[in-house]
Length: 266
Image (cartoon, rainbow, N blue to C red; front, side):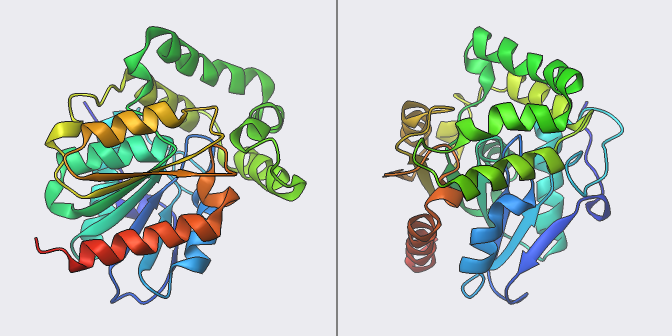
């Protein structure tokens, strides 16, 4: 059984003309809507940017039970419906897994996909699944500040500026808590979207930081190769959080993708 939150329980940050095409942004497992500050600022002249705090994160309410991957996807679908129809969906890391599942479950709501530094889910490998499930206990034992201080620096490249590392760590510490993080980790551990990918019909842009050591370029290439309509891009000089580390280049690729999608007959 999955749990879908009412959209009133899900906090969002929004920017842009409400009449413009919708770009829904779904953050990674250790983050929040704050991760999309470069897209809220840099893309809102073209699209209506809506970035959520996933259920159980930051300013969003805690779910009463574990949503499961389908519950997160269905909650995102409800946000799209509330705003009037279809959306381009941008997912980073865990958010990309949700975005792919959303496109598989609700193809009528997804105009296109932008999947960044993501994976098919940790369920593709038993060791990865076990490590993902163990994270909730680590968070409970260490607390958000220590947990974020240990994990945050791994999410950017070795050459990332200190202020970006500090911002990533601070965002993580302010966003994660129990039980929400544990629910998300369990959903990731159970996910293997390998068989879902060929049935997804939405055109997709798949990006990955060249120095992403968390999910890695091979996994992003596997996503792109499994989708029916995709373009794959490697962003040089970026780690796992390519939308934050190379925002100008990232946004330029998103703009190009949106332009192509708008010009392509349905």
